[in-house]
Length: 449
Image 1 (spheres, rainbow, N blue to C red):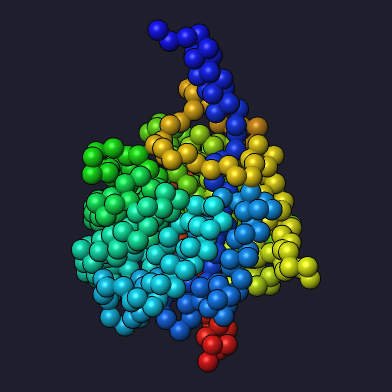
Image 2 (tube, rainbow, N blue to C red):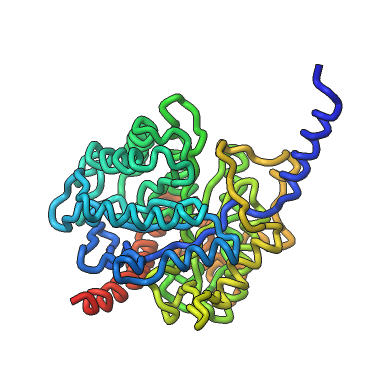
């Protein structure tokens, strides 16, 4: 017979889970391996720059150690490319190059040594040199083989996270979801049975259009080979400038309207997502909006398990979205104001603490029913069409997912034509976003000559 103390323990644990109010994952992207990648899936070998001093580049290992030990960061996103892993930026293959795959493994091991979770990001936009995976470009079988090889490498590492690709766009969604299902099967069958897998949607994985494009429905229908959905999470991206590119210094939205709608959807589906890329500059508008966005994400930790901010690693402190800490004379690192106030502080204020991490059982388990009805009206209300087109409104979703696409988020769900217009405008915005990689890549390429 079960004791009264047992039930008291369950009640206490349930209360703590509800009161926690902070995401389980606080993360930073360690950029460099993606430098030069364009939205057509081309990624030149000459500019890929894994941030490791052992490879003659930035001290990514030291940065990660600082973020974990001094700030409590517990997940890092480590971009690479298909081209880098096979050491060929001309012809596609599903066979790893031992040297380059070994270098990426070195990067992963530097991350894992910190005790954090480490996210593999194949930064190819669901493409290889212009060809869409499974849709006229590389075959599904080749893509699955790449992921199966990665899964085999890290099958015994429970803290490895698999992000299938960075920001798919302009593709057939039904076909893409079928591709992702094959990848999930390939990862699980290669031995990575329980690790997290992030499922990215079309239109650059935007929080504002995951529902309206049908991405969320299609991706959340994906299962593990045993039919469960344990460890499968919706992948989410969102920037705060006027075209969702992340290239512009001024923030025009705090994205709360977008994240409110998506949170409601996830609660209804009893599923969860992880924001694997978001970022902002240190302009005054962003110090307001980015902080507000991340506070809201923490408040909705029942459906958002974490956020990973862009970016540190190979970027220097002058990059518009830089979160790279500054090396001090004594060998320590100092965070910049953007990271301290808008990435770390919202997490800490919500109760986040050093060493906090997702349990090994990562099945989606939303909090109590009372929490599922919360709308966070005290923070912001859903934006109107008028607000969404007003750059001066900090609560309007004026990124390319709403404003630059012709109105509020609600407008994107009214007709297929508006969805198409949204996608086209997003493509322009994300093409601008890639400038952050191409510009740095040009500098890196010159330095490596």
